[in-house]
Length: 108
Image (cartoon, rainbow, N blue to C red; front, side, top):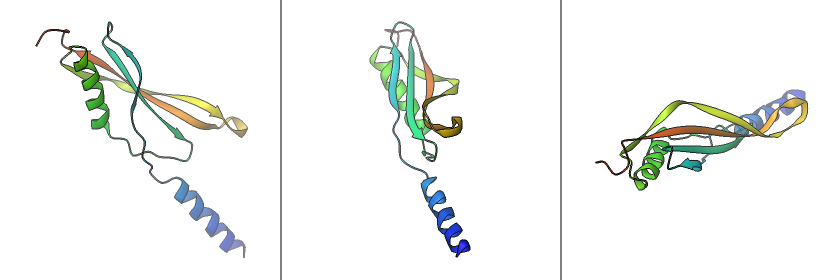
């Protein structure tokens, strides 16, 4: 009985930790500084399958709209806890990656 209960609980945990879909969203942008920040949110059990290429394309599109040529990632990401659960665990997180627009606006 206990083995069956443990098996069911283990399967539920594995299924809840499966990869999920999430989209990158522009969460901060400064035309003057040529900086674009993209973020996605996830809970503690989700492992979103995020496309780095999709993030680069979104940042480049924003930069091109401002007249820049392209965008490059700064090279790191930050994680912010949005809600706490018991024992100090983070229930929901926002992951952010910042990009620098490259090429002076108006120059081709």
